[in-house]
Image 1 (cartoon, one colour):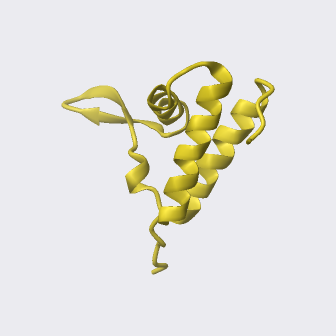
Image 2 (image 1 turned 60 degrees about the vertical axis):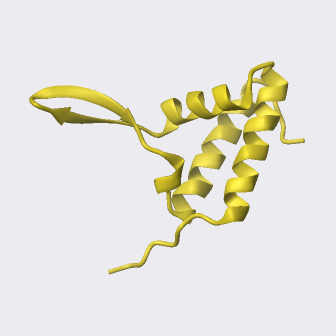
Length: 86
């Protein structure tokens, strides 16, 4: 079984720099960008007591590969707005 590498502190620091950069560009708060990006890219559906529910996976649960993909998704999305990483 392949061992997953947990996300690094550097990835976490870069993620919050990314949120801050997108927030500055859009005029939003970094926490709002964090919530929006989680909803946009980390959302999944499950069933609880026979009812479909939507949940958002925490970034703290991402391994290093998933974290890199998540950040790439954010950058791709934000670049469509005309943003580029400062």
